[in-house]
Length: 397
Image 1: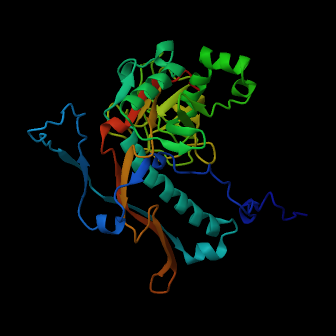
Image 2: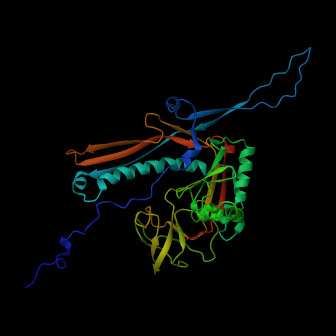
C-alpha cells in the first residue's frame, strides 16, 4: 500500500516560518550631532535655491590712546559669506494587495520601519559626507599608504591631544555639559580598539579606573566625548596593500543578503581575510554601498562570505566588475563641536524627513505605496571648525 507522505509530496508542504522577520541593527543619527541649523527661521531660508551664511570679522586689539586734541581713528569690519545649496532625498516601496493579504510573516509591519530606518540613514549620510571631506586633516602619511602593521599609523591618545590643541587654538565652539565644555569625536569601533590598546590608556585603567580596561568605558578623552558607532565612516580597503595582495573583481552581480559570490580570480584569497567590496575611496568622492566582508571559505572562484547583512551576508547589491580587495582599511576620526557643520531643511517636511502614505494605487486599488522625502543639506561653512584624523586599523577580521 502506497501511502501519501510528506516525502513524496514535498512541494505541497509549506515550510514553517517564524512570524517575525529577523530585525537588523538599529540605525541612528551619528554625524547630525555635529550640525546646527543656520538662521532662526528655516521656513524663510529654504525658499531660495541656495542659502548664504554671512561672517563678520573680529576687530584687532586696539593700541590707540585717547588724545586731548584729535579724535581716535575708526576701523572697519570685514565680511564674507559661505553658501549651502539645498538638495533632496527620497525613497519608496510599492507592495501588492495580495502580498499584504497573504503574508504570514510580519512583513506588513516591518516594511514601515525599514523605510523609516532608510530615511534616517540616508539623511545622516549627507552629514557624514560633509564631516569626512573637510580640509583640516591630520595623518601620519597619505591615505593609500596607511599601514595596519605600523604602530605610528594607528589611533593613539596623542591624536586626541593634537586635536584638542588644534580645536582650542581655532576657538571652535563646544557643547555645554555639567562638567564644562566638551567637543565630540566620532569613530568606528575598529579605531576605538587601537585607542584602547594605547599604553597610556591602559596605564590609566590599571592604576585609576579598572572599568576603562575591563569594560572599555572610556567615555571622554582630552575634552572629547567619544561617540563610538558601527555607523561611523570607514574607508574600506583604501590603505596600504597587503603582502599577500588580493586585487580582483566580482565576476557576476550580487544581491543584498547573498552569502556566496563569484570572483574573477581567486589568487591570494584565504579564509579569515577581511575584504573590501566597492570602489576605493581615494579622496573626497564617497560611495554609499562600499562594504566589508570576511571570507568564510573558498572553492575555485566561488567565495562564501560573512557580512553585515541581516542574514550575515551582503548588505548591498554590487555589479559585476566591482573591486574585491584586501588592502588595509582606514578610519576617519572626526573631531568637532555643535557648530562644526551647518544644515538647512524644509520646515514643512521636517528636520528629519517625512513619511508619505500609505497610499492606494492602481485601477483596483491593488497596490499600496509608502515613501519618505526630505529637503535640505549639510556643509562645512568654516573649515577651522572640524578636524579629521585618518588612521589605519589593526583589526582585520
